[in-house]
Image: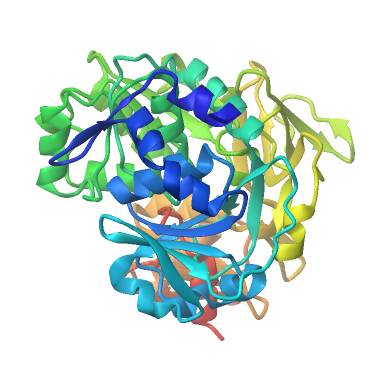
Length: 467
């Protein structure tokens, strides 16, 4: 056993699939040969939310290997940069795809997956505390990862459990990819307290998903803002499908304030709690939590720092007074080691020393509750005026009730919008709500705004359409 396996598997949670059940400790025991072959090495795991994905997760994240988790459907063309930058000695992939990796050979097969070994393996020099390389954006082609330790994962898990009062009787269901740190945290929390975890690759928009929710009396559902937008759009939150759900968790971006009000009204008087959370892969997964008692009253807030963490709002090294905007800085035991861009970075130690400059800007109110107003790098200067693109999106989306996204390109703001709205109407709202000169704004009608696997808007892809 390792420090992580002892912590996460000691309560021996039940893992439930559509047609099979197993205990977490059995998954660990059955992975003895797998762990023995991989050892202390880098492994690329191409997985989904199923039994083979859970096998890889438990036997790498809680073991000695250093895994990178990406989608099982990621094409080789998108993996090229990662393979070139890291040359992993092992790949865990569906057997039907092993021919995609001609520099590797199969050394072990488990169910429909194969463990591939590099035919010309290279010795990896790995920092002793490194446990996991986590993706930062959901983009499978980017070799930039966050270097996390077992201590990071364990401490953040403890804090999340405390913030949502997770109990052994709180069954959860996968609703986010295993490859996404928010999805990973759900697994970690459930296994840590010994609660049941229902694992399915089915999207929550399918009726079969909600049949599993009802059948196993699922009490915990986690989603990103887009998840709740869909639940609201299809009126699932007001249906009997969520009767058993008692705890809703939301992270992964800003939940529209109007939707917060709607959800608050929808669950009022029921035995349901809604937790808004804020986090980054750089802080393992979660930084803050808005207590469910404040949901509906502290509209727009992401709450306060998790247990053993601290959030500071600073400008030029000085703490800001309430309601004064500044840089959001987080300090805590869940702050990761730093970034990794190439194989040589696997040997790097703790570069961040427990302090994370989040890149977000915001303020706290008189009660100490944090409000995020945007990303520092999403602040553009157009015609001499600084423009917070996140805030602009928020204003227009709430005013017009539409889906839109904005990017800067060639000294212009380009607004992508799904609905068919007259440009003059958009320009009129921009002039009414902001000081932006509309001569520097372009409008782009799209059928659907592209999103990352995490549900966040893919700004990079949108900007790419303008070049």
